[in-house]
Length: 157
Image (cartoon, rainbow, N blue to C red; front, side):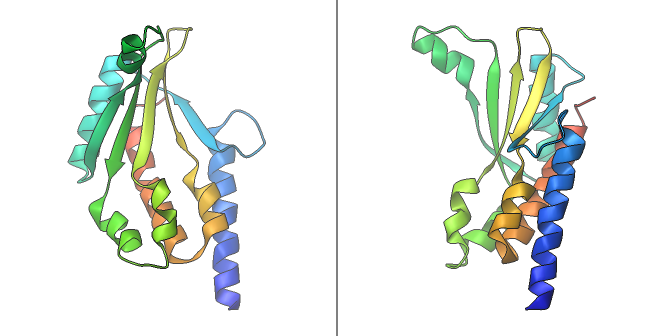
């Protein structure tokens, strides 16, 4: 029991440390945002290529700018890439005790342009949530987050 408590505390602490390292303010954030080194289209292409090269799958890429355009709304470019590591997802989806965290699947990375003309990448701060979830689900969520951070590093400053 003590080991589980220590592990859960370490997960929570690591989640907050990741947040502090990846945001401009000192308070923990639910989302993490970084500037891309590339323009919008090149960021989406490089990020997608890296995801696939690392053995992950892209389940779908949502073009929210196009969706809004179909609804007579104009917004700057934004795409949400849904990605999945089937092995990691299986750990959660094959266990009845862990299926309640399935709304966090698949992982999502958003690429968008702001009015400053710069392309940004954002994603959920999964380790912050993992600390609240605990157990095997938390371990899997943190592992998935750490792997996706490698994809993001390939295109960010």
